[in-house]
Length: 419
Ligand code: HEM
Image 1 (cartoon, rainbow, N blue to C red):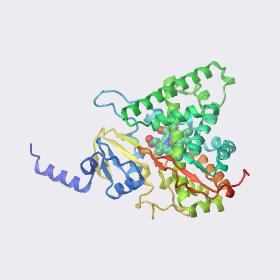
Image 2 (cartoon, rainbow, N blue to C red):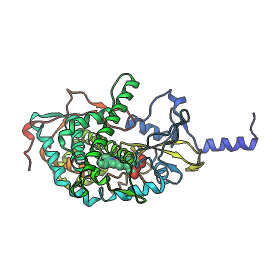
Image 3 (cartoon, rainbow, N blue to C red):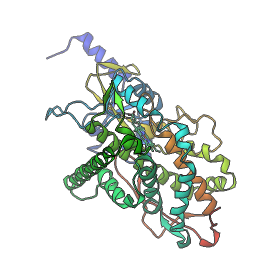
Image 4 (cartoon, rainbow, N blue to C red):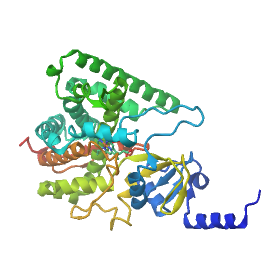
């Protein structure tokens, strides 16, 4: 069927005004979300691209911010699967929208507020030093395995959900299987992830039941005990919503800090002048945290358009899934001069590493404290270190950026005892 000439002209005009690279046509089924260099190339070649599978990816700061903030039109909740007709599993509160989401955020605000998080500083500092004690005399470590996986997980166990640190290895194994399942066969890897997820849920279910046995006045101040008395619209929150929330905090709060520290220490190990700046001027750490978050943001997020709309004047159909590449936005030259350079003297560092809009990261204060304390304490004790060239360095290849291993080494004679 031929189109009316005016419609054809309008379509041609839209295509010219809104160029969109189809990555399938361009490069087979290549996965573009695998590394900063690829994201940089993608961003520089245009503002929007169609991914294999049909999602549109936005890579520039301006468009990503606009979509993340437009929560009336772009929802977090994934649409019903068009083939199976199934609803996707809803992670609370990340995949709920509108007034119910606002109510959840209100309930959670005090636990993750700056004052509550500052109260954990001494404990976080002690944990960083305990972990460093474990390898400092060896002159080397796998930073991911020996430090950055163990650190946020132990804070989560002890201070967020109130479980003994002896559970650490079990939680690390679950975290690895859920978020980075390894197998040559993708279906087996997926199966591992689902199994681990089910085990975590069962575990939390059991802890909820145990805490419920205690009279309210004997319950501790952790997230699981508190959850038992949370109400929305006068009703206690269901166990299934609580479980979904604990699973989200488990997934969102552990791997992210691990990944961010991995890139941060990779940068410092390969840029000795930035590393020395932290050693000689620890007051720069808060700026260093923000600069490293800006250049090495790690989370790509998804939204669904709930109605026909436009992004930067370009049409988007209702039901269209979009990916917002936060890792790309901090490196956008249109927003930050000399964007890929880490500059501890930079003044405007309004990055999107924690997202934007109503779903902006709930744990950002905790994450910032964990990152800052890790940078401070490490550099007091191990001021000179580099990448260990004899060991394998390995970057994770999934939509959440991260390193699987980061071998670091140093001369034990240059290290310092705990202060
Ligand atoms: C460097 C570390 C972290 C980064 C880069 C990060 C990043 C993000 C981002 C980008 C979002 C927005 C998701 C979206 O809009 O769809 C988010 C949401 C969230 N984050 Fe974080 N996060 C970090 C650490 C943490 C920690 C430590 C916790 C808690 C222990 C946490 C808990 C959450 C929760 C519960 C949400 C969902 C909020 C909502 O939907 O209302 N995050 N995070």
